[in-house]
Length: 126
Image (cartoon, rainbow, N blue to C red; front, side, top):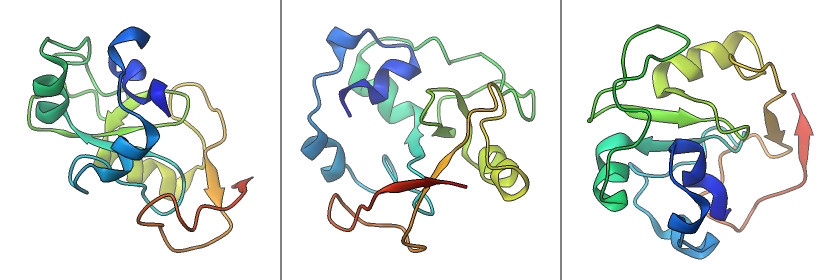
């Protein structure tokens, strides 16, 4: 779980949050959506925590082609590709793969989204 912020432009050494710390983040900062293991971050919160600009700021979302802004909610796939949350959720309604690399997005057996580490089950491909 330590690598979660690495996909947002931070170096691995900058990622000092434990898995337990990540699960304690408020739901508007970190959410498991529909049990697919996708992370949702508020970019401004990540920027504040990182203490520097991330490479995503000013980059376009590959789904809608609009630039990421400071207050945007971002969805991060397990492969670390990042999109606007709403863009990624709409994409995943149609296809169960990353919009960038076509890697399958994993879904948990349980249809309901877990609220923490408890309830996580073995993943299966969608």
